[in-house]
Each structure stands twice: as structure tokens, then as C-alpha cells.
Length: 364
Image (cartoon, rainbow, N blue to C red; front, side):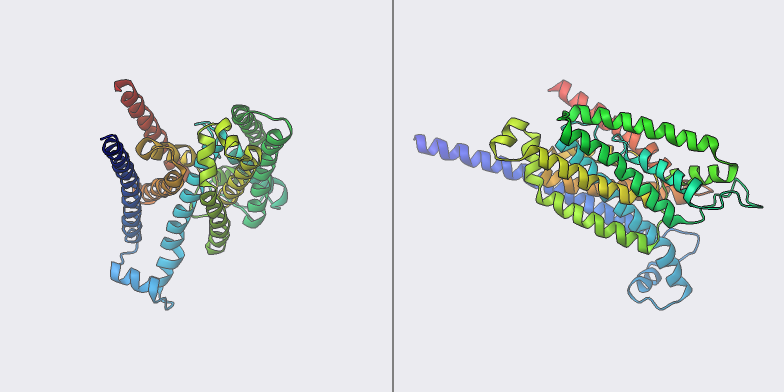
């Protein structure tokens, strides 16, 4: 009799676990289908009217016609940039929140975006050369050497990362302190950026402001290849370490009991997240809220299990980026930088998820 009741309990637990797992998988599959639908819809949008048969013919049989140029030089790079940026920023935010055990941790709140913007401003002012251009209008942003600006943005973003890593490794700062330190670093670079804007002439100022607005139009196929390669390595590493992040979510004592080197795991997670973010932001400009909002949205639906959270954060990040891209390019008479749209969408969506989660917890 005792054995039968125990078997019944085991069967009930197993069934409940399977249902819980199926729900997570169903969510991920649904988000993947939604992302594919958004990609197909976006391929058909644009000033040039192309049928889907012509679009897919250009994708799979590129022959050099003008239609191929529209698809390969305009539409596909923006779609690829939106997906890569969403994946990179989404998974980086999820990892940072897990290893720091802080819901406010993200590439934006840790100061990497402002540091990158300051580096770009330095590149435009000092290294770009010829910032005062005869006949140029302040209304038309001019960046003479995008490669130098991109390198400067990456270098300063990694400098901010280095400061956070030094604090983590040599001062034994708590995860909460690291987030506060990131906010302080963000404020420092924000002040430095404001100073560069203050001393810049009209043309350079317009270029700096233009770069700050996150845009999918700034990156070409060569840049996308670099972002893809770096992001792929980082994503593989994060998925490989997903069980370690689950252990850290359970608490440092539990993680140590499982034999996990917390300091090394946190250091490597921060470093890889920062590299992915720095590469992405240095090519596309500042894109806020993806790394913060995407993981929280996934957590509210399927929980904190990093086996599913990391993939879900990439999918939700890409979906938000694709929706933002559609709105920024096709909803208004003029193109609006996608970084403005991500903040406009991500902020209210993030608040909605938090309020809904609060009401759900209060009713329990």
C-alpha cells in the first residue's frame, strides 16, 4: 500500500514537471514562429513594391538585378542587424542578471552603452579628422571614418568593463555593489559625453548625436559578420554554462556546495557579456532597454530556469527589435532611429510586466 502511494506521488510529480517543461518549450516555439512571421512581413515592406516570389527568388538566386540590390543591400542587412542585436543584448542582460543576482543588471545600467557613446564622440572629435567641413550643414551628420569611430566606441566600452571587472576581482565587491558601481561609471561617461557635445562644433555635434541614436542602418555585411561571429561564441559559452547560472540563482552557498567557482564564473560571464555588447553597440549605437526588458518578460512567463531563459531572452529581444524596426522605418513619414523606438516600446512593456507580476503575487 505504501509503495503504491509513493509511486502515485512520483507519477504526479513527473507529470507536473513534464507539463511545466512543455509549457516552456511551447512558449519558445511560439516566440520563434512569431519572429519568423515578423521577418517575412518585414521582407515585404519598403518603398519598392516587390512580391514575395521576387523577394525569395533574390534571396536564393542572387543575379545582380536591381531587385537583388534592394533585398540584399537594404532589407536583409537591417533584418539581420535587428535579430543579432536582439539576441546579443537579450542574452547578455539575462546572464548579467543571473550572475549578479540583481534584476536591474543589464549592459545599459552597467555603463557600457554610455562608455561606448563617449568613445564614439572621441573618435568623431579627435581621431576622425576634419570635423569642420566647409559647406556642411549641421542638419546632415557627417562621420568621415566610421571604422575609427567604431573602434573607439569598442575600446571605451571595454574600458568600462575593465573597471567593473577590477572591482569584482580585487575589491571583493558584492553583486549589488557592482550594479551601483556600473551606474556610477555610467554617470561618469555620461558627463564626459555631455562635455564633448558642449565643446563640439555644429557639424561634429550633429554627428555625435546621430551616432548616439541606435540605428540598424549603420552596419554593413562586414560588420554583421563580426557581430555574428563574436555573438555566436558568446552564446555557445552561455548555453554551456547554463547549469552554473542556475546554481548561482539558487544562492552562493548552494553554488559553492556544488563545487562552483563563483568568482571565476561571475568574472567570465561579465567579460563575455561585455564583449558581445561592446561589439554590437559600437556598430549600431546605443540601443537601450533590450537587455533589461527581454529577460524580465521571459521570467514572468516561464520562470528563471536558464536552460530556457537564455534562449527566450534572445527570441524576445529579437522580436522587440523587429517590431521597433518596422515602426521606425514604416510607421512614420520619416525614419526614426530604432533606439528611440526600443525605449518607447520597452519601457511601457517592462512596466506592464512588472505591474502584472505584482498583481499576480498579491492575489496568491
